[in-house]
Structures are given as C-alpha cells and as structure tokens.
Image (cartoon, one colour):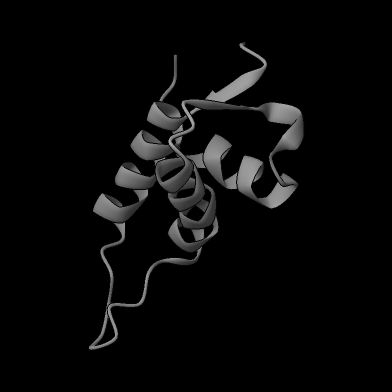
Length: 72
C-alpha cells in the first residue's frame, strides 16, 4: 500500500458512500461517514492537493475511508 491518500481515492470512497446513503431530509443531511470524509475531500479540492501522507490523515477519516475504499 502506498503511504499516501490520493484525491481520487477519497473521492471514490465518498462517492460510494453517498451512492449507498444519499443525503436525506430538507436540509440534505449527509450520512455520518460521508460527513467525516467530506472535510478532507473539500480541503484537497480547494487547495488542489493530489495526495496527502497517510500519517497526516486523522484516524477517524482514515477509518471511514478504509470502510468505503475499493478493494485493490
């Protein structure tokens, strides 16, 4: 396994989570796992970061990403 988390990997995991659990209600509330990944996803998008070191990823984000990532 690579020592970094790519934008593509977090984007794919977030998309899988959102497909399985679409936003709900009038406020379009996201599933808890999607919400955890969304912060890192947005930061990488805004800052145009292609990858971040795994060591820099918060444990809760890493755990959720592991749950939703594709088997490689």
